[in-house]
Length: 350
Ligand SMILES: [Zn+2]
Image 1 (cartoon, rainbow, N blue to C red):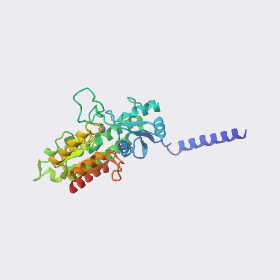
Image 2: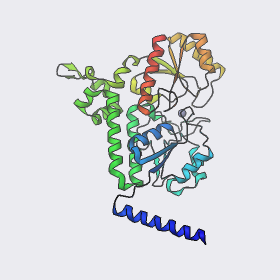
Image 3: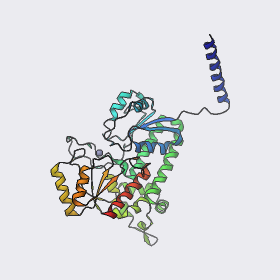
Image 4: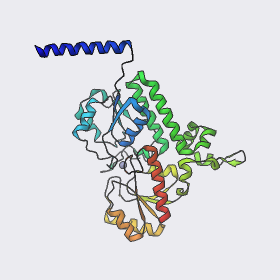
C-alpha cells in the first residue's frame, strides 16, 4: 500500500514536470544515436552532427577494417541505434552479422536508418573480370576511400543525408554541421587563397576529375594559380612523383591525390600474405628502382617489411590508415596531415 502511494506521488510529479516543461521550455529531443562501423565514419558523424548526436564506433583505430569483432556491448548499441553507417563496397563483410544479430529493423540495410558512406562516390580499381579471385578483399573496387581528403567530404555529405532522413526536424542543424566541416576540409586541402578565389566546390570537382594539377598551371594576375596553393596539396608537393611500395592496396586514393608513384605491394593480392618468391622479387625491385619508402598500416604484420628493410635499407613508415590508429591522427583531417608528414619524414631519411 505504502509503495502504491509512492508510485502515484512519483507519477504526479512526472506529470507536473511535463506540464511545467510544456509551459516554459522546449522538451529536449534525445540525441540521435549513431553507430558507425569504423572510427573515421564516427568522426565524420560527430563533425556533422555536433552535440545533437551520440556516436559509437564498432571498430577501433588500430584494427584492420576488414576484420572487426564487435563486443556484446557494441552489439547492444546497434540494437538501440537510430542510424547505422558503414563504408560498404564489401569492406565490412562482418557488419552484416552485427546487423542481423542486433535485429534492429530501423537500421537494417536498405532501410531509412542505414547509410552506405561510399554511395555515389567515384571509385578506383574496379575489377574488370566478374569472378572474385580467392581471398581478394576488394571485389567491388577499392573501398579505402577515406585516405583521400576530397572523398572524406563526399562521405560526410552521405552521412548528413542519412541524419536528415531519420531526423527531418533537425535537418537544418545537420546541414549547417556538414557545410562547416566541408569548409574546414577545403581550407585544409587547398589553403585559404585558392578557396577564396575559386571556392571549394570548383576545386573539389577539378580534384575528383583529375584535372586540378593541369588547371593550376593557368595564370591569374601574372602568376600561375599553383603559386596560391596551400594546405595539404602544398605540404605534400615533395611527394609528387616519388616511388613507393605499400603493404596492402589501401592507398590508391591517397597516392592518386598526392601524386605518389606506387611500384608494388607486399601482399601478393589484397588479403593474401606474401609468398617467398614475391618477397624475393620485391627485394630485387627495391634495389633496381631505388625505392626509398615502404608504407604500412599500423595493423599490418611487420615481419616482411622489416626483412625488406634489413636487406635493402628501405624505410618502413607505419601510417595511420584509420582515425585513431596513431596519436597524431585523432580525427579525419589530422589523419591526412599525419599521413603526409610521416611520408615526408620517411623520404628525408631514405
Ligand atoms: Zn582492403
